[in-house]
Length: 212
Image (cartoon, rainbow, N blue to C red; front, top):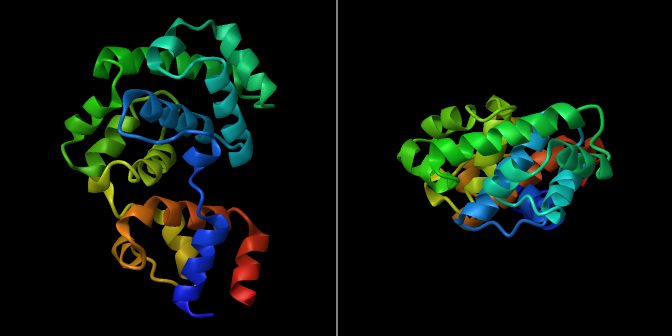
């Protein structure tokens, strides 16, 4: 299989961002960006991506789509929403982290993550550091947010973190952010990064691609 064919398959079969899976129509607006941050928090522990996505959907259904709504919500209401998604074992600590994070976003960035973006001033490293001020988000979580946010923040492109680059290397593709970025249009960078991560999380997917 040629590299072009493999990339085409990656995008067609696995190129769905986690924001899309969570029902987030990502735009450069406060609510969808905050919902992406919530999804990032949920993905930042050892739990399946599908469970984290389901939890993000439940929190959204409960109306916690802005930092204001999250901050006003009851701790038990957050625990209950996480429980409905079977986000167990970490539900209580995550409910606390979400409440604390909402208050931080309100106090530090006036509830608008575009202010965080402006504070980073076009520096991806600075953005990663700011993201890690949010409870529960560490280096891995910062990468998750940036991979997805590049869909609406073009200055982040091409954002392919170490995890995506390692999968690309295993598949025989270019394995630097610049090299991967050149293989697809900029508007597909987020989908391409998500596809590589999805394949990395599925041994069957990687085997099928390599065997084709």
